[in-house]
Length: 377
Image (cartoon, rainbow, N blue to C red; front, side):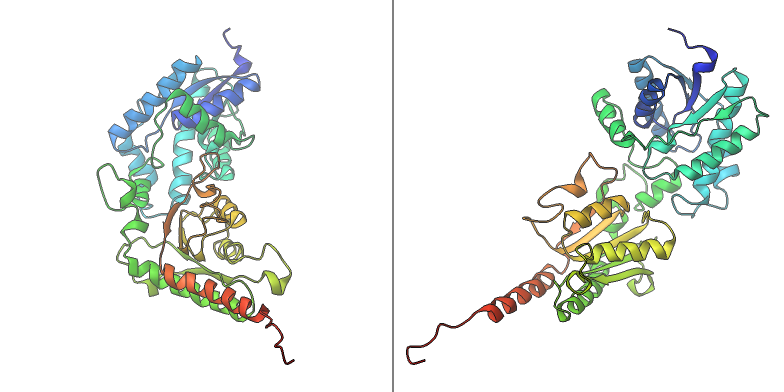
């Protein structure tokens, strides 16, 4: 049935997978969306075409109209949005300006075609701050003199992201490996052009000596825990460098922590949790989206969950824990049911990390051993 004007809504569509859960949610709320594919940021052109094809595939599968904003120019986007902000981090000022650019075009289209409201699929992503998107949408709506309103839909809620992953798999939609623009692509895959396989991610390009430097600092924290009578686990979180040849000594350390569960009488006081709290306070955001976390021992289920919630992109540990580890035993860090899957690097100074744990338990067993009384006693 054709939607009545007050039930229609324009859905700015960043890609097919994200839009899938949004269409479902809007229909549950009694609205009928029209997809508006306006993504002048996407580069190269081949990537734009792949995402547009996925959006068209979704539109056909679920029976909605799709409009391509073919007049959106990438050159204009580079000039008006990215110029001067090429090196801004993901989620920063360049992204805010990009949201405003795309949503202004969506607002203009809605106002010009008698659609009273618009919203965006951008908020389904756990990597997008809904408050920033909402501000951009409201600003775009304000330029239309009341002809259109921005719908404050936070599509991450109600398990939106997980639902988008499931629907994308069910419909066979192409899922992109980076946000969209050449700058996000460069940050995600700094090795350069081409297909940018995962092996070219910055954390893989960084030399082993780089990771060993920070694992040694984590081992220093583990030794502090050992001296306190705690399980010797230590954690360090750093700001991820932009240059694969960066000197470790020049990198910003956001947090250093060690286990204090016994001394604090707190079962959650694991090194990783404490370090995540420190790092979040240091940058003023719970999303640690541009960091590397080093820990001497594979994170437990609790700590793995905290890593996922903090969106830590790279996790490096020394000693595996296949029986109780959050990844080895439960697969938390690679679960497609969760909002985030970090890259994992294991075995860094593994022998040293394993030895400090083994030495603790050897000492405890020795302390607890009581010799049998002799025949003459």
